[in-house]
Image (cartoon, rainbow, N blue to C red):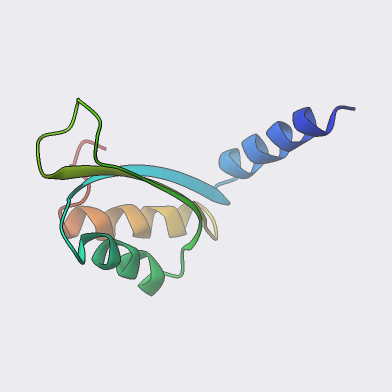
Length: 96
């Protein structure tokens, strides 16, 4: 079996079993914004394994940044807690 294929299978399995989660949020591109966002995740014991910060996309308003974060979670209930906390802080819309 190809190692790359095995890696994809494992990653999809972790996502389906709610052990990994991927979120994209829009932040104001100013000092401290990313830190505040990641502190919320830290307080909820979400383990960030990859983060991408994009402030040059033409789809963003001037002064905004798109942040995509991949994190390890403890299951579906944990993911719901994360989403609710981020909604309460204004990072996620209620329809996400």
